[in-house]
Amino acid sequence: AKHAGRDTYRFFTAQMNADVLARLKLEKALRQAIENEEFVLHYQPKVHLNSGRVAGLEALLRWNRPGYGMVPPNEFISVLEETGMIVQVGSWVLAQACKQIGMWLRSPSGPVQVSVNVSGRQFLEGDLDADIIAGLARHAIPPGLLELELTETSLMANTERTSDILSRLKQHGVQISIDDFGTGYSSLAYLRRFPIDKLKIDIAFIREVTNNPDDAAIVLAIISMASSLKLEVIAEGVETAAQLNYLRRHRCDQIQGYYVSRPLPTEQVSAFLLQRNVL
Ligand code: C2E
Ligand code: CA
Ligand code: CA
Ligand code: CA
Image (cartoon, rainbow, N blue to C red):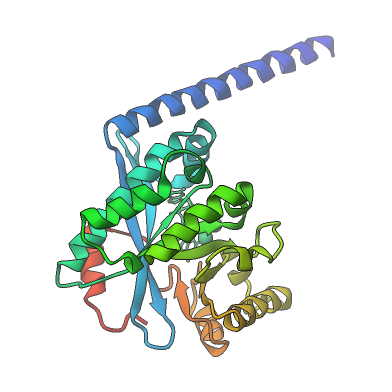
């Protein structure tokens, strides 16, 4: 038994060592990725339920890692956030999105709104509002074409500074959306405190919305609250016609999800945008 115990212990430390080494290797590779510009943005369409027209696109980060292919964000975003590298990468994302909005604006696609995910840490370091306003000006973009997606958690982390930055951006015309709505632990008071335009219902409530009465109740409550507060409401993670029909029947404004389209590389987006009705 003693022997087995020692083996378990040895195995355990070897495993821990491997984890620490893998993490360090990942951090190092991410620093190189920033250096070598290995990040790319894919864009997922959002659609107006009443007209079937494209309402906008969400920019989603991908890491084109040499030897690994396209790495999805759940494999590296948390490392970027913990190390603070998200500030640099986030600022690249914003700059890249602005550049792309400008290109679509002056192409046959015409103006299209793009939303960008912003981490809480981006509000704490640097000059987020000045950077964004400069990015829009550089590409001569109407500020309403940029939307920021923020989570409840990131809003609650540093309320004073965050609300100052958001107010300035809002005054400038940038749109603000609450991502993963309903999953945070915050009070609803922040809906009055921050200049919010849109609520994005989390995929967790959409998945079983047509089967689970509790999820349906939450979704209906969010849609109704958004309507009372004159906020737009969008459902994410819509994968089936049944979910789409349910959301349409209950007057959700927009949907996003695999049912309409997966996130697409830039070249494929331009063709997608030329369609009149995508539903
Ligand atoms: P999110 O902001 O909630 O983005 C939605 C995620 O759901 C995306 O995953 C998208 O590809 C996926 N999705 C869309 N439609 C469906 C569907 O119908 N079914 C299912 N199962 N999934 C769907 P993705 O691209 O892997 O991004 C994951 C998360 O990484 C994002 O979640 C966001 O929190 C974060 N992220 C992505 N890009 C950025 C970024 O530029 N900056 C920051 N800070 N975070 C980012
Ligand atoms: Ca998002
Ligand atoms: Ca989300
Ligand atoms: Ca999410």
